[in-house]
Length: 404
Image (cartoon, rainbow, N blue to C red; front, top):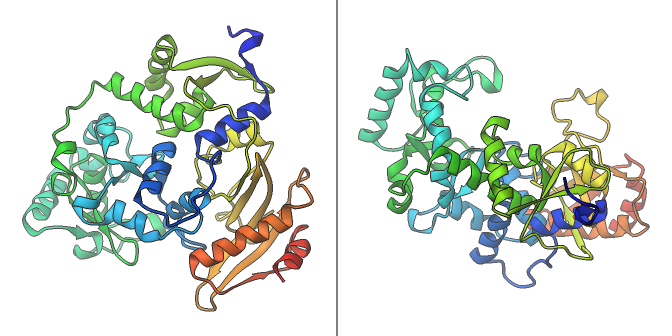
């Protein structure tokens, strides 16, 4: 077991985690370029995709948190632009995600399982077995006719709300999950347009050797460990949604190789692991609004362990039961989460609406002023002309003063 010398204070663990995610560095002061984008992706390992567009789509926000006012076209080009400029691809990692191209071979074990009908949603599982001929016919159609979206297929409209997929959409999603097709681009509605994987990804990626499954699991855990800085086994495997069985051997091998260092973190009941290259800053001077699925907060139990901050996204909570609002972003100041704001982009009126603002008990006196600065930066980034603060939440009045 780790000795007392291998124990981290909670503050140290928090600073390590923030530095690993890029919050130990100042934002760029000049034009944000592809190099800056690549730097963030190298730290986070992926960006979670979400179609909710109350403020802006989820995958744009972690870059804003770390880079400030950057052109969203940078990410769009890297994810869905010309093949020669593309550096990211879409796949299931930590939910639907954008990932570096070089990560694709490390996820082929998941594609192989999906091809067998394993690890996929029940609604698309039949396409791995009795309905496979339908999917194969659709694959042949894409090969012959070119890229297509679910809405291009006959009977594309499904029943039952968001997940009431048509047969065609379900077949496309199984082909996507099994790696046979991938996202060529996204339409203005954010609808995915699919194409054959070997027509979208570079030959260097498609033709790269497929690692042994155990080696792929270990490599993914290593990426997670670098991106987290310090975390429990559950934290590590959650990053790429690996099962305990898939992760157990890889963690042990990374410890044996010295890449992971077993440590105790003050107040944590679970064994923790520190990446050997993790920075240990004495101070973090961050200021950032965090997306609900930013890697620093997406694993809610880790957020509580690191920051003492209980966080739940309340989109699916009935309005009268919401505690903090519909689309709430935590506010990071220094190395603490000091407030949370419910935000909405009113694009028709050109207004960033702060529908509620709540302070945490440990929020410093300057929290409202610093949050106001961050909201101004966000409004400028989103192309909104003004900010309106509604009188809801214990921070709203002070925030409104600093916005005037």
